Length: 116
Image (cartoon, rainbow, N blue to C red; front, side, top):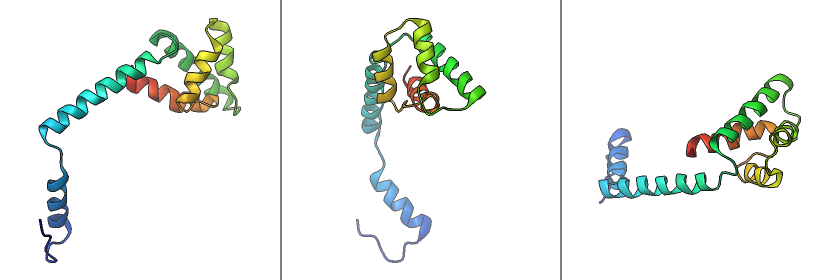
């Protein structure tokens, strides 16, 4: 398709978007891929959804009360109290952007919510 020099603004954008838009088959493949990715993400959760929710509630409350100490202090406190596998939980949190308590709340909790 030849784009004429006369096309401006919305006309030009409409032509470009129309050329690159997804058809129904592409949308279906994308939907299936997203479902597969969410399933893979769920399988990697180190704890049940209930325990992960409890972790995020605890850490969020600690960050709200005391701010982030730029450590996993509140996270590790909860892990010890819950008696769960420390290394598995921390590894998963870090893989999902949770390197300190505020990042656990912002990044890892968001990943969990998007994939639960």
